[in-house]
Amino acid sequence: MDKFSKTPDDAIKYFTASTFKLIFMSIVTFGLYNIYWFYKNWLVIKKFENTKIMPFWRALFSSIFAYFMFKRIQKSAKNSGSDLSIFPVITALAYFAVEALGHLPEPYWFLYLFSVLLLIPANAAATKVNQQACSESYQNEKIKGWNWLAVFIGVTLLSLNIIASTPTFSLFLEAEELYEAGDFEKSREKYSKAIKEASKSTLFGFYEYEIRASYGFMLNELSNKTDSDYFIESRQQFEWIIEYLDKNPELISTKAQAITQLAFTYQQEAAYTESEEEYYQLLEMAYKIYKEAAQQLEVNQDWRVLASTFYNIGKTSEWYGDLDEAIKWLEKAVEIDKKYGFEENLKEDSEYLIHLKNEREKMLNTREPSYI
Image 1 (tube, rainbow, N blue to C red):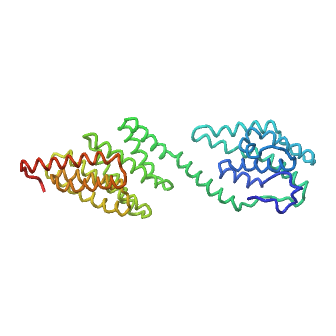
Image 2 (cartoon, rainbow, N blue to C red):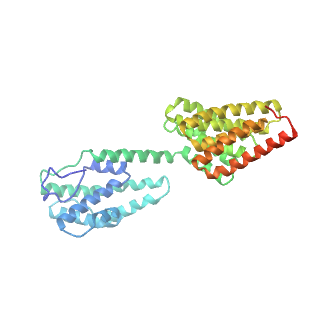
Image 3 (cartoon, helix red, strand yellow):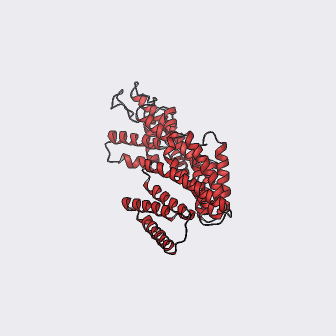
C-alpha cells in the first residue's frame, strides 16, 4: 500500500502519485487505480474535514462525485497560491463522459481508459498543495508492494481482452453461434477460417488447439446425425490435436479425450462404408483406439468420459458382431454410472445393455452364428 509515513500526517492534504505512475497503474488495472486514487483522497478529506462522507461509495461512483473532488482541490490550490487551474465543472463533465465509454461494445470500450488523463491536472494541483504544506512531501512514484500484484492481474486481463478482440477469436465465436443456430455449412466455413488465422499467429497460435477441439466435437456430433463425411474432417482435427498434445506435455490430461474422439471417427465411418472389408477394418481400428483411450481415462480418473467410452466400445463390438464382448463393456459402463451417480447416462446404458442381452438370447435360441 502507498504510505505517507515519510511526511507529517497533518501536512499532507491529498493522496497523489507521479504522473507516470498514475497513468501506468490506471491503464494496467483497467481504470481501477482511478477509483483507488479517489478513495484515498476521500479518506484524507474525511479525516481533515471531519465529515461523515463514505469514501468507498464516493470512489465507486467517482464519475458522479468527481466534481466535488476537483472543486476541493481547486480551492486548496488557490488558497496555497498555486496558479494551476483544474476547471472542475468542465473536467468533471469530461471525466463522466469518457468513463461512460466503457459501456461501448468491443473494441471501442477501450477508449474509457483515457479518463486517467483527466485526473492529471487535479493530481498535479494536489501535489503542489502538498509541496506547499510540506517541503518533504512524498512523491509516490515507485511501483511496489500491492502495485505489482495489480500490474500482474491487469496485464493478464488486458492480454485476455486483446486475444478476445482478435479476428481468430471473433471467427471462433461466430462459428459456434452459427452451429447453435443450425447453420452447419456456414459454421464449418467460419471454423476453417478461424483455424487458418490461428495457424498464422505466433502470439495466439495456441488458440488453434482450442478451436480444432471444438470443431472436432461439433463434427463428431454431426456425423452421428447425418450421412455426411463429417467424420473424415473431424479425424483430421483430432489427429492434429493428439500430435500437438504430444509436443505439449503440460496438457497431456486432455489427450485421452482427444483419442476417444478420434476412435469415434473410425466407428462412424464404418457405418457409412459400402465395403465389408473396410467396414471390419474401421471397427477394429476404432476398438483398438477406444481401448487405448480407456486405459488413460482410468488413470486420469475421468469417469464420465470413461463410461461413455465403454459404451462406444460396446457399440463397436456389437457392430462387429461380437455380442458377448459388447455386453462386457456395457456392464462396465453401467457399473461406473451407478458408482458415480451418472443418472442421466445410467438409463440409456442400462437399456442398451438389456437390448444386447435380449439379442444374444435370441441368437442362442435360433443358433444363428455371430461374427467373432
